[in-house]
Image (cartoon, rainbow, N blue to C red; front, side, top):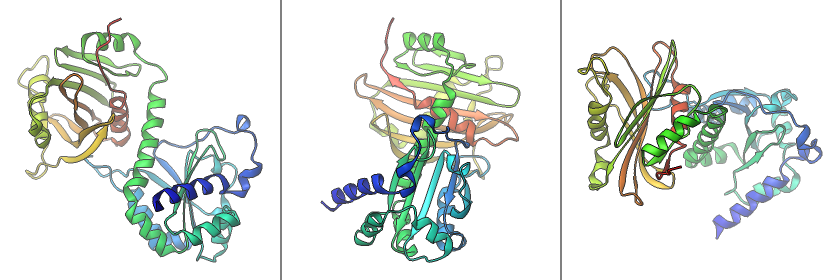
Length: 358
């Protein structure tokens, strides 16, 4: 019951949060939200930014993305003083406002102005409510997360408990924005070829090409001078639940058989170890509403000539009685790879099961 009440209170806050927006211009005249997909504008008190609450937010949002060869943060974080929050900065695509009622600094006084008196009263009465999400507040395509609490310590405790929820919110946001960016133009003829030949469908961005298509396996890729992105899908009859406990080995079997050099058959893709350790990150998750194992790690060609990170999902189609292993992997020697990996992850997110013949 308390959980339902918290949801109702959150809804009240959502619609009564900011005095400033009561007179905002019509949405059709709003500017478009700006900013890189992985960037977040953080609006908070300088003193809190310098102390425990700021450190906690930095550690959470700048946490390294698992499975990359060099550490790259999940998100790029920029703090701005509420006193300097001008019209241009307000068009940032992703924003977080941090407000605690116990702080009385000049900056915190400005931040409390974003709360109606009614909202402040609710925050004081119900400490279970600590966040609210608003969309298109100052710009089209914008998302703002308000984090608030009676005290800095109390808000810090809420962030610790709800870390995964907050990260998932921005990860999903980044995925959706990446999908929108990637699929302005698509390889529709290749999409048709895939769905006619296999038991699944994928959205394919412009410029991607088919590499291999065999029964139970499909591989496509995008290559230019300094980067390579790949996506492959493997499926076979589902007979053994134990395969979910052996995803890295399942991958090895697939790549050794199918991901071979067309001219030098002795070369194939395998897992890359670090200091003889298997550095594969495995996580139970949901993929398209199904139980799945998400896997992240490093791959290499077995002669060590090239390598990079990968992300994959292993799940079962109950309808088709098939187990799927779908993966995106990238190579970009000497360059950052977070964005490239997020792009192949976005392609994987378009997966749909079922053969359709037109």
